[in-house]
Amino acid sequence: MPTSTEEDYIKAIFKITERNQGTASTNSIAEHLSTSAASVTDMLKRLSEKEYFHYEKYKGVYLTTQGREIATQLIRKHRLWEYFLVEKLNFNWDEVHDIAEQLEHVKSDKLIENLDSFLDHPKYDPHGDPIPNAQGKFTIRTQISLFNLAVGEEAVVVGVKEHDKPFLQYLDQLKINIGTKLKVVNQIDFDHSKEILIDNTTQTVLSHKASTNIYVKKKMFS
Image (cartoon, rainbow, N blue to C red; front, side, top):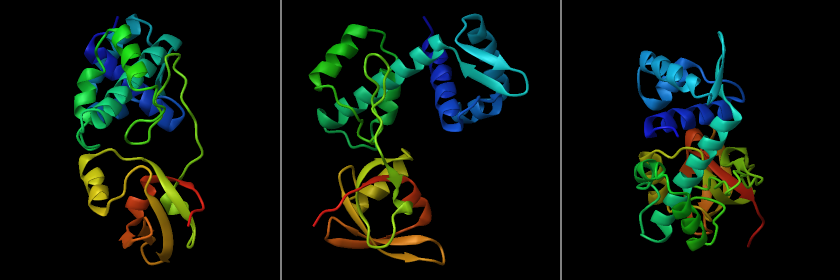
């Protein structure tokens, strides 16, 4: 059974390879975990002995089936804890990531299954990310970035790409959260920012960066 530190590396490799649809380099892992490349190299040597990943020279590493199973269960626990903290303990969505990072290392399978049952098997966490089920399967949905909406189109917020605290707090200030209705009323060609109507009441301008980090699902509503 991997240690908590080893689990962090396994999850980092999973996230990097999922994003890149390929392998994870030593430098990308180091950047993801805010550590040195030398530390990553040492840890990869230890993990390779446990057969959690494969290494390809000049390319990087990718997880074995066993490694992917461990990573998926870590993500499942992390996102269930985030959901619990927000829905049951009234934490804000910008407060839960660091706490869930600690709780995801709890080893009790029974605790996690009881937690999932207690929460009535949620499919998405407070940031709109899919929660894997006990078999490691993710619920897939159709979504696009707000940036891809044309003028006049309407949508509902279903997730965010970035989870950093300043961005989530910025969205809170605008009263944008999961389930918020948005309509694009104008696009500014100069900087690709978008003028949007929030819940049919408040109008504001979102930068190109902000709009690309908000996931929406097109929906017609009055």
